[in-house]
Length: 81
Image (cartoon, rainbow, N blue to C red; front, side, top):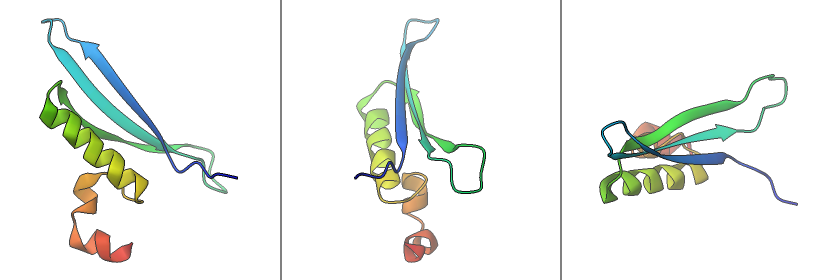
């Protein structure tokens, strides 16, 4: 049996000016005793290699138990994992 750790959603939109925007978010299964889903925004911005790489870095961090790649880079957060 597998355990769902997180659901990642990626959205690509066309802005009013015709440019493209990409963003991502994560949500986590409801914890025992809770009645809400936890989640947080991941990287977003104009569609570019940089933004897509930032989203990929955030997904990697979520897969390893962090909220995002910024949190993963914090020494005090890494020590807790």
